[in-house]
Amino acid sequence: MKTIALELVPPELDGGVQRAVEEGQKVARVADETGLTGAIRHVMIPGMIAEEDDRPVELKPRMDVLDFWQGFRPEVPGMRGLCTQVTAFHDKAQLTERFNALRDSGMDGIAFVGVPRTMNDGDGPGMAPTDALAAFTDVVPNRGAILIPTRDGEQGRFNFKCEQGATYGMTQLLFSDAIVEFLTDFAKRTSHRPDVLLSFGFVPGVETKVGLIDWLIQDPGNQAVKEEQEFVARLAESSFGDKKRQLVDLYKRVIDGVGDLGFEISIHLEAPYGVSKPAFETFAEMLDYYSPVSF
Image 1 (spheres, rainbow, N blue to C red):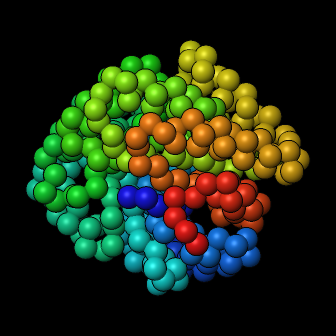
Image 2 (cartoon, rainbow, N blue to C red):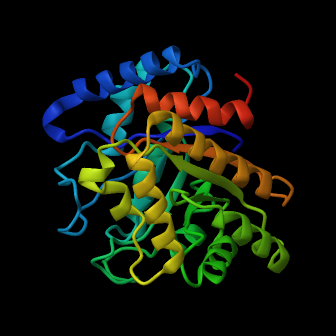
Image 3 (tube, helix red, strand yellow):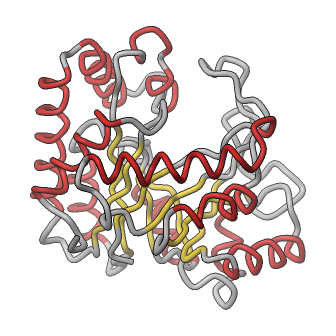
């Protein structure tokens, strides 16, 4: 897919379509201020569903992916869409209708995701993501799967998703270079070479009080994730200059480590607390080192 994608969570429903318009205007303005105009080729919009009660930021009802995209898109001419879709609550006919609508709206790729942590794999009346990957090869040309390099058993899990039809993997937020070892081993074990969207996020100071990113990447009992959480905590307390330097250094290590493994690499950028100039300045410095697209 060879792209730079910016993740944007749909706004709360009570803001109406105007919130989507304003979000598009803000992205265009901050990109212009930081030299990123023309860099962001896709917006990645996650489909939001209810999650655990301990989520640090209350998840109020959000706009549907399609509604948000239709309000946002006119403000960012030339951008295309990516999204995630939970498949476990819809049958094949419902998902077919949904995927056709998403594709027709300008969505170039759809990542099929599983149930929240409050449910077990296979729960829900619909289709498991791995079943959906195999079932919709003719409906969704670019079919994505989530890739968490620090998760136990992920080598086998991701390989199976590729065998089922995944054409790209989108990583969880990366706060270590564990993805380098993961993809190095994966390349040795299998001939699958899906596109990989490497996800990098900005950590503002408010993370110290709220802990949203810490919650997003949690995996109790996993030492590798504990070290990433500690890194996030240090970043949150750092000055902007130190924070940017550490995040760019991490970006460089990852890019240098995966560049020759045979995977098509794209970049996925996240600002979990919302679009901001410091976040975009950090992203701009990352992309100065490596960008999969010219801008």
